[in-house]
Length: 208
Picture 1 (tube, rainbow, N blue to C red):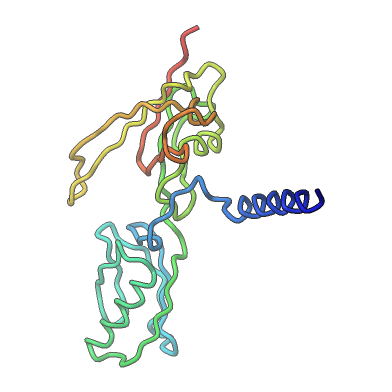
Picture 2 (cartoon, one colour):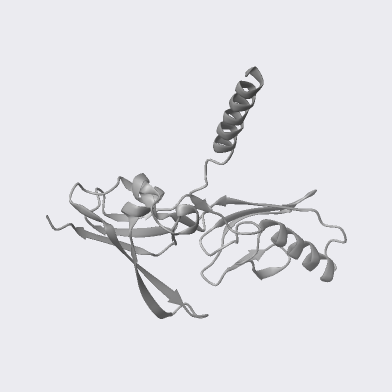
C-alpha cells in the first residue's frame, strides 16, 4: 500500500515538473533555431577585433553591412549559421585566418496577427519574441478573450501566401472551432491550431 502511494506521488511530481519545464507549449518555435528576418537588430563582434563590432538592423532585402565584408545576406540564417558564414567570408577574403564570431539578436522585429469582430480587444496583437506561430486558443486568451456574445465555434482565419518577391499569390480562409479546441473535443493533434504572423482573425456574434 505504501509503495503504491509512493509511486502515485512520484508520478504527480514528475507531471508537475514536466508542465513547468515546458511553459511555452503553446508557442511554435523555429525548427533548428530562430531564422533571422528583416527588421531584426543584430549585434556582432569579432573576438579581439573591436573595430569589427557592430549593432545593425537587417534591411528589407535581408542584408547587413559587415566591417571589411560589405553588404552580406543574413536573412534565413540561424545565429550559429551567421557566425559560421562570417567566419568563412573573413577567411576567404584573407582578412582573418581564424576569426571567432560572436553574434546575437538584440531585438526581434515584432510580428503581428490582427483581430476583428467580437473579441474583447480588437486590433493588432504582437506574437511573443522569436515565435514562429502560436496556438489560437492561447493567443485569444492572451489578447483578452472573446466578447460575451462571440460565436466561439466559428472563428474565421484569413492567411496570405507570398511569392519569392513578397507579392501575395494566394489567400485562404479557415474556419476554426475554438470552443471545441478549448474543451479538447476535436480530432486535431495536440488540440493546437497554429496562428502565423500576418493572419487575420474574425469572429462574429452568435445568434441567440
